[in-house]
Structure formats: C-alpha cells, structure tokens
Length: 263
Length: 327
Image (cartoon, rainbow over all chains, first blue to last red; front, side, top):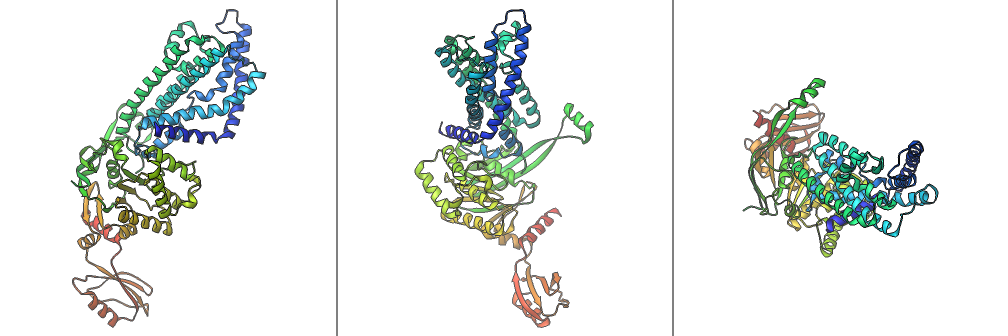
C-alpha cells in the first residue's frame, strides 16, 4: 500500500494548489445549476402526469450534481494521457510497483481533490439560498457519505479505464470519449435517473454509472432508503473491482505492444 | 555467468504503412499493410560488474531499443537477456527495483513539486527505509551539490540543474546498475563536466555498473574504458577506444602554427587535412614514418612556431568506421 498511498497523497496535495481554477469552476458550475433548474422548473410547471421526484427533490439532486461535478469522470486524466503520447510514461514502467494501481491512485486524487475544493463552498451557497435541502435524516446523511466513498472509488476506476484504453493512442481516444459520454448520460449528472423512461430503469440500475452520482444523490434526498446503502455500496465495489480487472488486462496487453515513442 | 548477458537478441517492430494523402488514410482504415523494421539483429555481449561501457551509434541504430529491453520495459522478439540473474521483462518489478535509469530527454521528477518531494515520493515507491534514504540523499546532495536546489520546484530548474537532480533521483534506492541514455544532451560545458565527474565517481567508488549511450564523443573519451559500437541493430565493435582507433586507422595528426601562412607541403608521407591561414592539420602514419622523424622533417623544411601531435578526433574515427562498413 505504501507506494500507492504516497502517490495518492502527492497528487492530492498538488491538485489542492489550484485554488483559482476551483473558484472559476465554482462560478461555472453555479450558473449551470441555475440554468438546469430553470429548465426543470419549466418542465414541472407544464407536466400533468405525476413525477417520481418532487420539484424540490429534483432541485436538490441538481445542486448535488453541480457541487460534486468533479467526482464524475467527465474528462480524461489529460496529464497521464499526454505522458503516454510523449513516451514519458516510460518512467512509470521503471518503478517496482503495479502500473495500474499507481494510475488508480492518481485517478482517485484527480476525482477527490478538486471535489473537496468545490463542494464545500457550493453547499454553503446553495443550502441557505438556492433550495438544496438538507439530507432527510441523519441516517440518510450517513448513507450518503458512505456512498460517496464508493462513488469516488468507482469513478477512479472509470478514469483509469479511460487512461488504459488510451495506450492504444488514436483509436483508444475514441473509445475513451464514448466511455465518458456514457458516464454523463447514465450516471444522472445530466438528467436525474428517476426521470428517465420506465423501460430504461432496469438497464440503468444494472450499469455501473449510477453509482457515481445518482445513488448518493438519491440517498441524500431520501428517494432511496438509507437501509439500502450496504447493498448499493456492494454494487459500487463489485463494479470497481470488475472494471479494475478489465483495465489491468487491457493495460497488460497494451504495454506489451507499446513502442515507447520518440527514441 | 556475466552480470549482464545478452545473446542473439532480436527486436522487430511492426509499423502500419499508410499511403499519403486523404485517399491513403481512408484505405488504411480497411486494409492495413505492415512493414517490419528490424531494430536489433542477433545482438550479443557480456558486461561484468563494475564496468563503465559506452554504447554508441548513429540515430536509429538500436541503442534505445537495447536499453529498453535491458531495463525490462520492452520485450524482444527473440534471444536471451539476463541482468543480475533476472530476465528483465519477466520479473519486471524485482528487476526495476535494482536498476536506475536516466533518459536525458525526459525527466522523472514531478514537474510541479519541489525536488525533495519528488525524492520522498520515490523513496516510498521503492520502499526505501528512512536510514538508507538519509544516507543515500546526503551522499548524493554532496556529490552533486544539490543543497540549494532541494526546495525548488522542478519547473524552475535549469537543464543542468534538472539533470543533476534526475541523476540523484535514479540512485536513491542504490541500484547496482545504471542506464544513462544521453545524460549530457543539451548541457553547457560546466554541467557536462559535473555530470561526467559524478558518473566516474559513482563507477569507481560505489562500483555501480554503468551503461552510457551518448552522441557526445568527449563523454566517451573522458569516461569509457570500453565502447560498444552499434549500427543497424548489429554490434560492429566491442573493445577499447584505442582498439577502435587502430582498427580504423593508425593515423596521427600534427597540428601546426606556421610563421608564414603560405607554405606548401609536398612530402608524400603527409596528407593535409586542413590548412587555414597559419593553422595547419597534417595527417601521417606513425607505423610508416616514426613520429619523431616526421616532426624533424616538418620542422626542418618549414618555419613552425608551434607544434602539437594528437589523435584524430573520435567523431572522425567513428564516421570512417561507418563508411568502411557501408562499402
């Protein structure tokens, strides 16, 4: 564990340095949140059918998504992909550690450090002034916190999967973009999953993506019972391990055929 | 068995061929044609513990490929390779914990972190104990004069400073063998000297085996007792620098400064390499005419104000060696 913890901690501390970026990002995410809520406001005013979430729950769901935006793997680990392109990745292969789990440690830092910088101020603005309701109970809050840990691990696994696919350089890039696109659509970070059509619910519940956003958000707003958290956490962890396993196969195969670029 | 043993090593790269232009790109999607490039052809050599070997050859000769195979990050197409009783690519993790590698054109330090934090991270990654780390760091800081650099972020270092830090980074875990891929590339004269002194010290004092690839012939002349010359993936020469000299030509150079700039050298045993104002370089064969006699002949026939005998520069020797191979 020692090398991976060190890797995580160094990356985490480095990312905490980018406070100006966090401030700018915070403003962007705030305005996006306002726009999304305006759209849902229009939707709820005109709809006549009963909806699975109340308008207030949807507002909270949207704000949680904006506050925890960086927890979702919305983009590649660019620095790592760049080092694969340039060949600097060679040094990572010269270390007596698993390349995969070092990348995973990086990915975990990449998902958690920026989230930490942005989430707290966002909560401070939106809870008192913009309709983010507090968790429905202490149990719901506890379940949310546990689920966030699962979400961070799962998100790190997906980030690292996208990086390992990039070992196939050009063709890999397309697959990564597809993967990250699926995340946006199927995790609930665009549209709350309960508002998706009924026929899609079975697939959405099976796929790993909801574990990144939808599950913790619904625990917070009480749409999923706090007592379900262990089963949900189990699903997050199983997917994390499965994705880690697949990524390691891809990486092993990819590194074998990789020619380190540029002499 | 030798410390490093390489026999019949071959590496073939498969490269997708693509016709130029838009049509070529479209065709490439459906039908791929591959071209095989043989980077190494039956390469064999042995290196003993404590040797300092210069591994030289033109661009694309196969130097980096060899280094990558020896350090365990590239799998050869065929052939055997054993470093310190391990097959590098089969036991990558145990192998890499015993070697140090520096690529002159890349850095292994974390760009945004102060140098010392990179070192601490490497300490964790190599699972180096606190006492070994202290010991190693103190020695390296002293030998490479790093004290004032430790707290500087890597992105603010000059190239020479960065190279010194990179060298230290590759040695914190006390490897028994060090691969240096062009460690002096782009450095100024002072930094080059510092790096060379350090490499020599490391090899002599710590008995670290060093394999050095370089295009800088001064590096070779200053450091390497043994050189291996490679071209087109084949070993052309393996031995001492003097041996290479003799094999190519036994010529010596006479460097003269003349009192009068207009002199004509008609001696059939002399070849004019360059004549530029009063500065002249003449080549002769000391096995044919002894050096002392040649000096006597030249000084009696010409007004010479200064005279200096030297070996032809190593660049010239190697260039001629390649020419000889080409024919």
